[in-house]
Image: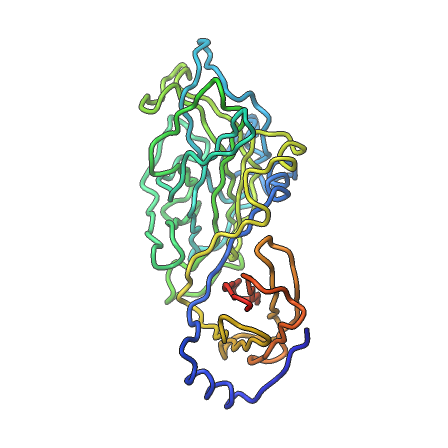
Length: 359
């Protein structure tokens, strides 16, 4: 498949004649069995700021293969669970003061004895800014900002300014999931996160922001009980490794299974893709549906030296990849099977995707 170039004037005239031109693009967060294994086996990207080293979780390392289901220290079954996440700055701190961590799409799944994964929690986070080592369970309001119009979820500033000395600890806004102790054999939790600008009127300092995030889960005796000083009400299930948050949407995972078990029966579909509409960029791609050619126009302020196009099938298999050499290009689809495709555009600024139907 070879790209063909056309004059900008011709492309612009054609755009106005089309009955549809896609102005919106979608940013995606991919997840896969291998990503989950990596989140459970690779070293942490950094240790957690403000957490004494004598705490086992201070390093940000993953802790995973705990018994599922489980009992408390009184021998009682935990019959509820919830996912959780936490965002920290690293031990060597973060100089950024105009960057927020945006979090969305929290998901919890149970693995049952029949081999099926079933989603038991989903939604956006709620939470608070806790003292970094959770001393006395002290917390303050996290200053959460609704990001419904910017890809979804919420965003927070972590570890700097008014939140110096605090993390952001969060959990799904809905209720805890009920645990059937006779049939649940595994737990998976996940969320998506990226870095965004706090105040567009100030300098963009995302490139120097250092936020690390990890996902995990907790057992609870039931859906409504609160924390008890003897730790009989709840206990940790485990957590994934602390991983850098970047300007691109990423998935962050925890899974109680062994790596071989995750690869054999992953809790996500192969190369699963979660999408949201992003109103901050414009990419013209037409026609759609397309038969033999597709034209793409990048925004004028994009740097084509750092942009490329990739086409994937519905299973996440890469079919084609080519750098953008100009802002306007036409791509030949000959040789690509008919059906639903994902057109992905990457640059030094953003990560965009769009559904394309080849007919």
